[in-house]
Length: 175
Image 1 (spheres, rainbow, N blue to C red):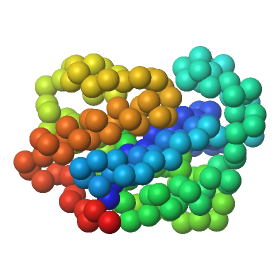
Image 2: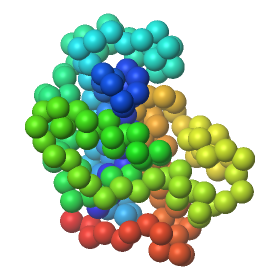
Image 3: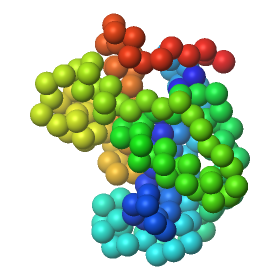
Image 4: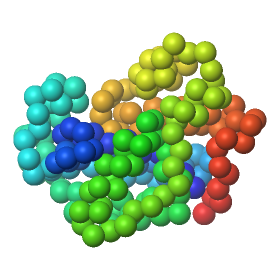
């Protein structure tokens, strides 16, 4: 199993940055078999730059659950799966930080679609999610929103699986 993940945040992983949105698609190597998505109340103001980038406002997250309220869902859907994200170190570190604050250890195998794309489909001028999706003809609706970016990353991941004659993507059991 794989879990394709994207998060939106109030800032950087170092320091007090918090999650404002999370989307996770559980994938069995052929198709999405489960998903989880939620806005999250970061319990702090969302900086103007982030509001402008993501469109997520303080008002939108005011009645959203806190990460603590969805932590069990995040742990459950990612259990036994390779954690896949575009620039995986960012998304993984943020979720790991939030879970550590709640007293949970969080360890998963990870796969970065940026690094994997550079190896399996070389020669693109940019490997940012937006530019790479555009050059590959992958639809990206809801840019800089967790669900839109994660859905596009699912399509990119499926393309990478098809191109992986080198065995760069770890094969996992589909249960």
